Image (tube, rainbow, N blue to C red; front, side, top):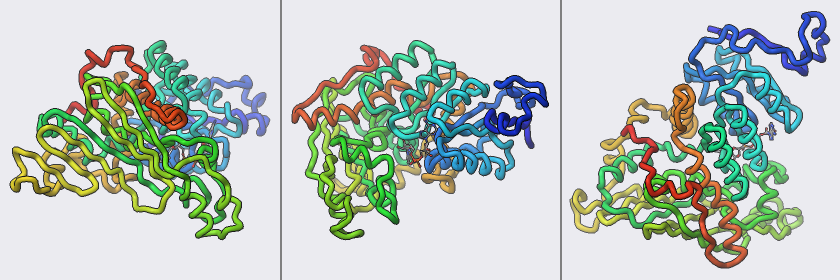
Length: 438
Ligand SMILES: NC(=O)c1ccc[n+]([C@@H]2O[C@H](COP(=O)([O-])OP(=O)(O)OC[C@H]3O[C@@H](n4cnc5c(N)ncnc54)[C@H](O)[C@@H]3O)[C@@H](O)[C@H]2O)c1
């Protein structure tokens, strides 16, 4: 069923020369709300590249959303997204694009409740701020910002406008991670003492560079100019709740170190030969970054950035407390009051099943990223629909995001650097919030 009246984008409107014919102004008040089923969350997407399109696919099965508009610098991508939407049986969304600021026109003309931002890293913060300033919920792809200053701006804009701001950190919503959170909340690990995590994902051959030609894609610029944990959020996301960060505890300092940069040159030599320019460039980004974070309550966390050496994917999550340990890479667990054999691992999967989180009672595994994106977006949309806080709030988004710049500063100084308290002291009284409906 189609609910929304068709609308011609301003660009097509001008091109088609129909403005006078239909007696509308240059900025026609589009059929805002007309024909739209009430109660549905009206969504716009900025950035319909790989990730934006994948998020759109995950939104399509949700009955409580209307995809109102899509926007991309590359018009063909926005048009493809609109077609994808239409082919699914929905109303074709309005298309915006061609300029970096076209999204503003979209924000001003569509009556949106939420905007998904899946653009290049350097535009996330400014778009999210514009979105919040118009009273709209932003769902920002990772990382939400590139500097601590920009991270503060997100926090302050969210506080000033009262609009919740969520970074779309999908791995926090994984079935295994949520089951583990349930177990942690039941006290099965005792007091949490230490965690480890990694983003071990060889992205050289498809994300930083073009697979066929080896040409630099936009993220490669960061490997050239920075040496830091470029992508900490997938690894740290679930850990924030395991360690009660921003709710009873906070990170106080981060100390990062980086290995030499060998992987990128080696990849290009192997695949394209010595003569390829990328085989010789002195990339600034070290292959493995190791960051150690301390918390106020004496916990420690080790994070590895590991995205440019050949290897299978892994997040190497580990949670260790006074009553036991969970090791994701081993697929194993050891709990003093449960595990049958003293000091022997037992399989994790039966625990995942037994302590399955409510959000995973239905099988979503056919969806992208094994259903994780669907679970995340369902929760985000529900928050927007009920005008409540998003499952990941601006403070948790800020902590994950700030690691990017702070790790770089620490590597540069070869010294620990203080971690900002984005909650301004509220961490002491804030209660656990994420995924409480076990
Ligand atoms: N959560 C995940 O699992 C996951 C996976 C992949 C990528 N990502 C994140 O998604 C984001 C996008 O990555 P990608 O791989 O899709 O990149 P991409 O290059 O495929 O897509 C980015 C799109 O944004 C568009 N764009 C850039 N600036 C714009 C602007 N001002 N207005 C409109 N459109 C604009 C580009 O034209 C492009 O089509 C990044 O932040 C990345 O870190 C997240």
